[in-house]
Amino acid sequence: MSSPLLARPGAVEASGPDAGVAWHYGDPTGEQRALEAGGAVVDQSHLGVVTVTGPDRLTWLHSITSQHLEALPPRTSTETLVLSPHGHIEHAAGVVDDGETTWLITETAPALAAWLDSMRFTRRVEIADVTEAWAAVGEAVRQEGAEGEPVTWADPWPQVAAGGTRYGAPDQEHPGRERAWRLVLVPRTALADEVGARERAGWRPAGTWALEALRIEAWRPRAATEVDHRTIPHELDWLRTAVHLAKGCYRGQETVARVHNMSRPPRRLALLHLDGSGHLLPEPGAPVRAGEREVGRVTTVARHHVLGPVALGVLRRGTPSDVELLVDCDGGPVAAGQEVVVPAEGVSSDRPAPRPRLGITPPGR
Image (cartoon, rainbow, N blue to C red; front, side, top):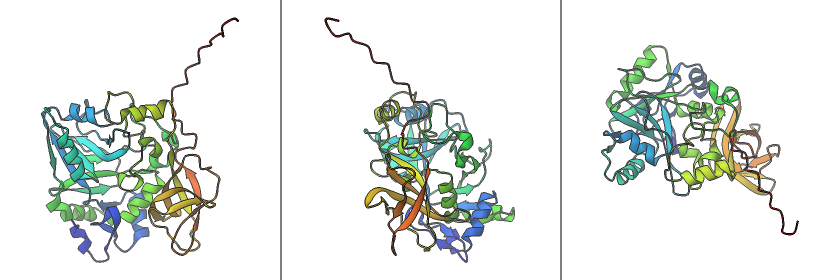
C-alpha cells in the first residue's frame, strides 16, 4: 500500500523493499544531515505489523524463535529471528510487548503470520497481521516507549544483548553506537497527522535514502536486503542482538551452536567504500570480484553525505581484507575498498576454547 505522504510536493517514491514510501523529498543530503542530528521523521508505513495475544504468547515465541523472550518485560525492545531447520534466516522481527500483546515489526508480515499460525498447536495464543491498521513512524531517538505512550520499538543494535555474542567490533568501538533509531506504531489513518505533529515541533521529513545511508554506516543488517536463502546469522554479526546462545532448543539452533562453537561462517558482511569518480552506482545484487574471481554480492547501496558512495556486501569469508575489489556496474566496474564488519577469522569474541586432546600411549610403550 502506498503512503499518503507520497502526495507531497517533491516526494520521490522508493523502489525495491522500500516501495510505497518516499525515497526522498527533494533534498536527500539535507535529509541525511537532519536525521543524523536527530531532527527528522521517516515514513516507515511499508513495514508489516503482526500481533500475538494470549497468556502463552511469550513462552511460545521463546520456544520457536532465536531470542530469549519468556521473561521479556513490558516496553522493552529486542529482536528475534525465525530460522529454517538448517539455520538459515527466514524471518526477522523487532519485538516489544505492552503487557497484553506482543508486537512484531517485520518485512514479511503475511508469511510470518501464516507460519506462526501453523505453529500454534494447543498453545493459548492468537496471531493477527494488523498491517492495514497500524503504521510505523521512524525517529532518530534512543529511548523506549513509556507507559501510556504508543507502542515503540527501540533498535537495540549494536549493543550485545544478554546471551548474545559478537563477531565484529566491541560495542564501544562499533560505528553503530552513534546511530539512534526507533519505530513508533500509530493508527494508519493518523499517519499524516503524526508526521505533521513532528514537523510542527521542528523536525523535517526524510526518506529511505537518508535512512539506508546511515544504516550502512552503522553496519546494521536488514532482512530484506542482506539476507538470501542461505544466510546464517553469524555472517551478518546478528548474534549481537537477535540470538540467545544459552536458551532452549528451537528450529535452527543446532546450526547456530555448531558454527559458534566449532566452525566458521562461510561468508561475511563488509562495508564497501565505492570509487565515486565515475559517478556510477551498482545495483543491489551486483557481483563483487577480486580480479576475475567472484567473491560476493552487493546487498545495499547508497550515497552518504560524508562517506560518499557506500554499500554493504556479503563476501566469501576467506576474501582478504586488503585486496582491491571491483563491483560490476552498468558503465564499467567500480573499485571498492573494504571496511571489515565480520573478520575473515570467523571466530566470535567468546568462542569456547577447544578441548585438549587426550594423550593415548601406543601399545608397547
